[in-house]
Length: 102
Image (cartoon, rainbow, N blue to C red; front, side):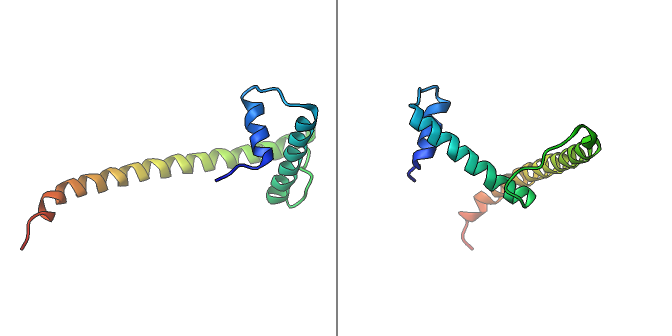
């Protein structure tokens, strides 16, 4: 998989490499494009909504949703770990029988 020019610039910048002013402008333009795409996907508009001081209730609601989803993700991860351990255990138990022919 080959990286785009912007991805290579991002990689260089995150490693602390100095970019030229042209490269920095290209990178910032790419970041802005990504921001617009993300905003469109999340909010249905190319400019992300801004929150005002009076929006604390909405922010708290969103944080509650995030917390609930993180709890669900954590529970699902633990369940998958349990299932994986059961599958590994079962495959270990069945392993010797696979070699036996009837």
